[in-house]
Image (cartoon, rainbow, N blue to C red; front, side, top):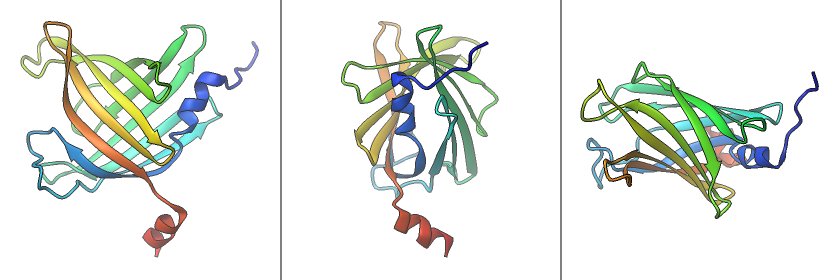
Length: 171
């Protein structure tokens, strides 16, 4: 068996590597427009240039602590991005299939999960990561409606922590 080597598709994932802080969140029913941003951070590391592992921690809208773990890679045999997401707030393992949008700045990840309306049913969800520049990105979640369109239910803005910020946070 020949070992995999990073491809062009993996370069997008490498842009995620680093320490991030959520600067704003909107859309969740427990988040008001005047609320302070929730205290969320995310650390993303590369696994051999083929995968990324993202670990996030913060405060949920109800005040309880939350954690999440995401893995993403590109499966050359399947021809698309693949990954998983788990969070301390639910017992669902989300399995992603994804693609880069034509703008070259947006990774769309699709997964099936329990319906907001009826947890016994499943809906199709999209998590979308969009880079605005090397140090700023958004993460949004949406659900497919019966007419086939997607309704965004949350968006988080994220800023890469600078080396100075990391140094100060350790002091």
